[in-house]
Length: 154
Image (cartoon, rainbow, N blue to C red; front, side):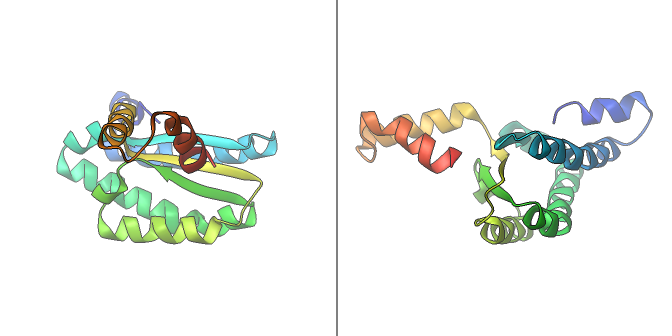
């Protein structure tokens, strides 16, 4: 979900308007993927680097995420779409984290499709954490692929 700010700038709109319009597009993408039988869809919604953006933009993005979770939760359930998340969600604002946790819990039984949101995510950080767990002995070398498969993809 990259380029929303540039899209807005090219139309002389505020960056946040680009993000809002991009979030509206997500619904159609998810529906189309579900209709053609895609079982897993991951949307890279907010990278760790995005925390470095101006605070008003970050707050606006968090408000958009919270609104999306509240507004689309019933539709996710109706369409049998489970929500999962990857990333360092402990950095998310409390209200966003609360709605995220609620949506994950309320869609855990859904089976038609799994929508994975990458939030405060960095693949480099994820791999670094796996290696650190192996170094600390908390994760055996052969367990890394099992952890990713079971915890992150299912």
